[in-house]
Length: 129
Image 1 (cartoon, rainbow, N blue to C red):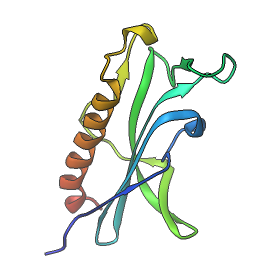
Image 2 (cartoon, rainbow, N blue to C red; image 1 turned 180 degrees about the horizontal axis):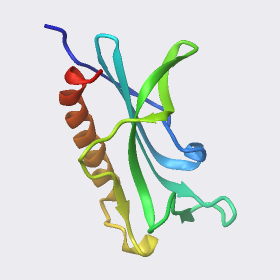
Image 3 (cartoon, rainbow, N blue to C red; image 1 turned 60 degrees about the vertical axis):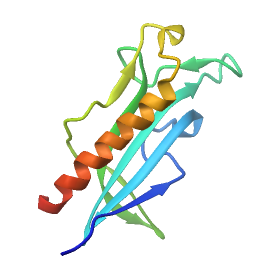
């Protein structure tokens, strides 16, 4: 039986302003020829205001988000094919009305959110086409 491989990588897997996010996780899940990238980004620096200021990354006060995509070969790396999203049931966003209202351990919660999606999709990848 094939084994599911999980590889952590150090760059944002999605989001055009990912380089401005101080929180970035990118995990490649592989099973045979099937590959999925799980990407979590958050805490986007607001470059208009300077250091220490953050902006939301989406509607509804979203400061963190997790998305998943089928992977495509891009040079030497399997990266997210953002045109091919992969659905999941786990929590995918951390939102607040204002930065001060985010949980103090928001980065830890974002890690937990990312890990939950990786676990869910690691189970599902075996049955995907």
